[in-house]
Length: 220
Image (cartoon, rainbow, N blue to C red):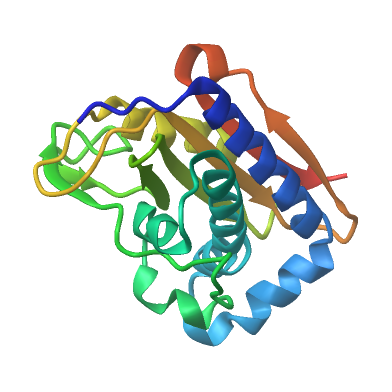
């Protein structure tokens, strides 16, 4: 099924999600505390802890808020629309409620692609950090990617990597075993070195060409 998200819905989602992330992630001490507290759940992967403990709750909140307002979606419908890597233990990372549902499955497209997201390794699948596949009384279909860099204050490389990976996922148009097809991408690049508050920018430079928004958090 072709994805047909309304452009205004896509923009609204991205801007709401950026605002929510700004409300929670500008305090670097708070972010570090969450990432450290969750260390037993993914000891060697701070990016996983940041993604599942800091970003996925906001994605869930905003998806429910927007889809319930626009399309009358229920919490159960939003839950079924949300997919992320490692969805099975999300309840250990954040508190799941009716208005902040969990994620119901994996975004993994197991179909072999000609190239991997890094440009090599022919025959790999595709696995974004998260996806939203809502297509009932309306459409919201987004692929998401998150990068967390604890040892740098700014990183053009992280931004470029998020953009390249989202372009890769958006270019894949089908899947033989589950829903797929995304109208737009939302990326998060978070640099966590330094003690000063974070500065946040919603990068829209690639919206017209690629339908990608990116929340870039750097040291102020």
